[in-house]
Length: 329
Image: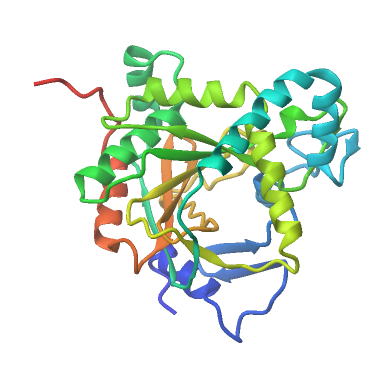
């Protein structure tokens, strides 16, 4: 196996087939790379980051203290807490999915394809320069919103048209009581509307507006109910018939454990590739990772839906230089 390209090596190691056992956790050492493949049934990005941090930690223990009460059913516990503390805000959040169901049209069909990954990393001082640009032009805006904006613009410039909504993975532990937490995969999605030229400040404001209430928690509950209704769970991707890219962004770099990961101080380049699940044929899952002041991007997608060269060029363009505001001509 040629291990010079970690993204291609990851594809081969995780490819479906009889040689890949159906286990919840697999660890591969393919010199010089370490690959960890795990099922989200074990936990979410927080637990994975804790595992990565513990590999090189001098002292054992959690980077972020484990919860006093580890909840096994966080969705139900968070909903009960919301009913007790902010019932009217919860009812308000329930209105949106009800209206969406009434407007729903079209059908979803099962889809089968090969998941590929494209990966790109920046130079050593990329994030330092990006934050300087942010502080000058978009003060208070998260680097995630800026990177997402840059990625959407880059997709367009390389011939891939994004949908008018982008999903951001958000941590739902905020909805649990202060003394309760979970190490399970308790995350939801913030579905925000976007339009070209994808202003980072507008994206950040939309994320904040979405996450201030309970809409992400309600969406999690509806997804969980759908899974229960279709048990045993079927790992099927779905095709809506759209050829536009549904971008889903995941950024866990600000977690205490992610910042505690020990990276080599050698002159060899760091590599952080993250393959993410895909639920829709036209989905591109973008993983944002930070290693010191480097930006590492991985896009997971179906290669029968999107041209690999165009997607790779889109990532390369993002990490080439920090984005600046577009200047009207």
